[in-house]
Each structure stands twice: as structure tokens, then as C-alpha cells.
Length: 286
Image 1 (cartoon, rainbow, N blue to C red):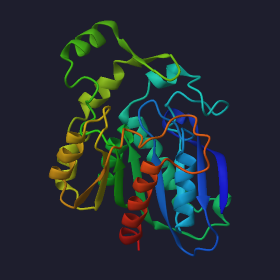
Image 2: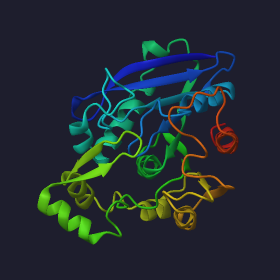
Image 3: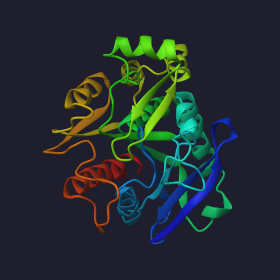
Image 4: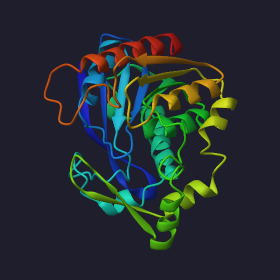
């Protein structure tokens, strides 16, 4: 198996971001799977690299990357070293980043000249909020043929949907702070985030996007997820035209993982999520 780590691309606002690629040279004409991390996430979190290994062994070119405004930097890809960038992130910027990755793949860059892959067979996996933005990207991007979500949100307004008082405070102060339990950081999010969503509400309406999209959708959700309740998966499944819903019994939001993840194999529950998702893409990206 081969791996390229920390390749540099340019995303929204001309901000650089880093990308990893995994593949096994034994497989010709590999389909591509792109992994989208979630809110307060990054490409090197926990066991995500082991997901890359599993997909490469199954015959895929697996790509994961840091969204350009996720708060990490090129110099510190595993730390939230630029909280201003995090504060100025929004959904439009994440979609620009995804498009940059798709264009890079379709250009057959020199860095991937060793890989025999097919840029016309591309799937997305999105975790948590990455699942939500993945729904929008799959609906908009012709190159994306299938989508899998892990623990996905059912609305991109999840931060404020049930908290109108938060929206008032956010508007008045211009910023809210999101606590990061793992790092202890208070991560700013400027009101432009809401304004970006408000300007494009139809585009960011996940239920409406799914109701119009015919592409196959593979929903994976833990029965014990306390971050995004299982009802969210049921809502997405009900809205989609072409979906299957897989429950991970006793699974939490990250299927038993944590950061850092020192083991050489993924958590048991995550292995189940990986296996069923590989099966899905092997069927849909033939």
C-alpha cells in the first residue's frame, strides 16, 4: 500500500490546505473515495488514517483533507493553531474546498501519476457536519456518483435551530464561542457563518436536496450517538429517494474512537462502519 501525506492544495480565499492519499498499486482503475471531516475535525483525527488503509486495501484511491478554514494550518495540521480562520469558515468555503479537490483529481496531477484511478467514479464519505456538507456537494457535483454519511447532521442549522436565544446573542455580539472539550479552546465563530447560510437557505436545505437527488446514499449511524441523535439519520433516510440506513449497535458519534488513536486497527464498531461502507461503494462505483 502507498500513501502520500500532506500534499498542498489551495482552497477558499486562496488559503492552502493539506491532503492525504492512499492506494494499493495491485488494483487497476481504482474508483475514488473522498473523506470529509466534521465540525471541529481534521484529517488526521483519531483513526481516520486506518479508514484510508482499509479503503486502499479494498481497491480504492482514498483521499482525506483538511478544510481550508478548519482552524489548522499547513505548519500545524493537527492543531487548531488559527482560530481566526475557524471563525471565518462557512459552508460556501467548504464547498469551494471540495470542488478544488475534485478539480485536482480530474487533472491527474503529477503527484498521483503512480496511481491508476478513475476520476469519473467518485464517492464521498462525510462524518457528522461533513455528512451534511457532503449531501450538498453530492447534489451539486456531477463527478460524485454516490455518498455515504457517518453520524450525519440532518440540518446545517444545527447550531442554532433549537436555540433562538443563541442567534440573538450571536447577532448582537458578532461572535459566539464554541468550546472544544478535547483541547480546552474556546473557538470563535463569527456571525458571517449564519449570514452565509441565510443567503443560501435553499442550497443548504439538506432535506430538500435529498428529496431531489437520485444518487445512492448510505447512512451509517450509531444507536447511542449523543452528539447527533439517531432520529437525524431516520429523517435523512425518509427524505432521500435512494438510501439505505445502517445502524451500528451501541455506536457513539465516532464509533468508539478518540484522539489520539495509538492502536494499529480501528475500533471494533468503526470496523463495522468501514466494512459496510466499502461494500456500498464497491457496488455503486463499479
